[in-house]
Length: 210
Image (cartoon, rainbow, N blue to C red; front, side, top):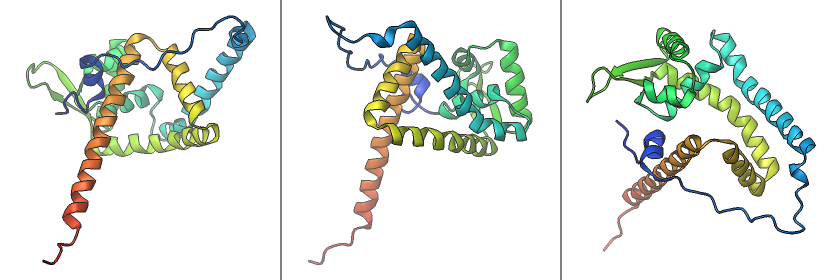
């Protein structure tokens, strides 16, 4: 079972939120035209259209197999948090128990998700993606990654950082803690992968002749 070092949801609960550097306070003469109503309405347009086109990239695949966006969200968070409890998934998705039961029922029936009882509490249900579920989640991710990667490349690192700040500002505290936990887990995995590559390189290096 994943521990808090590599499990985004557990890391979010165990660790304090890592705040981004504070933005400078607007002073006299600061341009605040982006706070005008028309600018905020344009931001709404941007969010609506971006969500439409971002999700549409995966909708085509989901339609082929008789699934929808609710199934996709469940696949995403189960894949990101192996062994996640049903109650924790319910908290992330914020849908009714009946809706989640229907979604999980579909995914289990199609062999995309498996359920196992908890070790400490046998009444608890833990969720994992099956090999078929992992393949589907990866396929959906690849579709959406392409659209995001193009946008990131065209915008540049400064814009990407600004995008992250804006999105975090829209989220509530619980979502920010989750993101902080996911970022922390990603850094741990990256460090572990780098160490493994270093060891592999050292093992492969030819021995020096004495």
